[in-house]
Length: 208
Image 1 (spheres, one colour):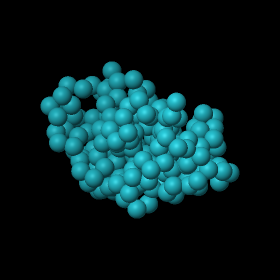
Image 2: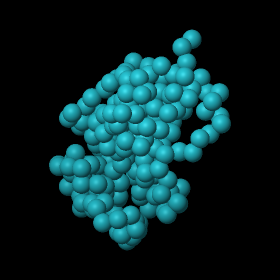
Image 3: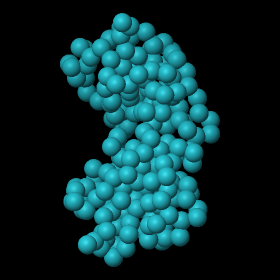
């Protein structure tokens, strides 16, 4: 049977937050693929290194040329189930050809760091373009977690908080990395300050 392509969640980038299962998948891989920053997390891994540095299609083509011949582990940040390359890999190679090894997501770490429950959280992605307004947000009483990375995303989070009459937004920058910073801010202050390119913004839920 052909070995599955492993999609390995590496957490936010802190070596201490990499799970034993993820580390084992990296060390046992005959081909270890991912961004240069993630590959650097496993200097002891003996397999061939396939960096994701020249665009998506060449990277996928390089993976395909090795499928069925070698054990492949593709490293992704955070958890593969939250805004990652996993969906692209499944569409290209088929669901049955892929196996996911979960990791700690930046959303999970952000809520942990600020001490909030995220059972009722709504997760929004604001990388590249900010989302269009969804009327369902107006009746959502729980918190919002916004995967951000630009001043436009910070302005979007501030506008969302103000529209919903929420008191504060948590700005969580560079989670699990050197320079981590967490601030609780009024929406207007967040809109003025912006955010780091690696950020999760949490719009607090309604006070109950």
